[in-house]
Image (cartoon, rainbow, N blue to C red):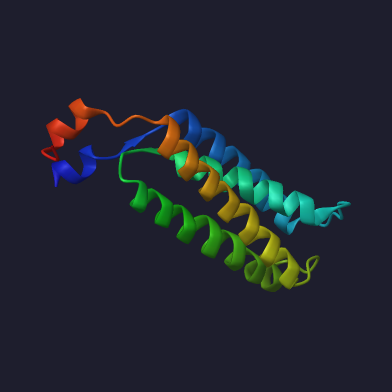
Length: 134
């Protein structure tokens, strides 16, 4: 069990920024405000949120981080939030285009994060040896 928890470290500063932006996103999602160019805002918010979420965990297990980010940010956040705000907020209407833009923003962040990790993050060999991987 120790091995599993030792494989992931939390970047607390990234987690804090993610939480603060999540509060802002929830407020914007349920508030009675109309913003111009809301599709751009959807894309940017889901890009930033997914990018941050991807980097919360410091681990060499890219597959796990990628899939966790996809599940939580893209599926639950990007699709689920649109359904949820439709049923909870009397000020909001359901929009399929919002879902498409949310998903595109989230997937774009995951792809860019994967590319960055692949080319610029070097594996920590001491950490790999400690985990018994090498």
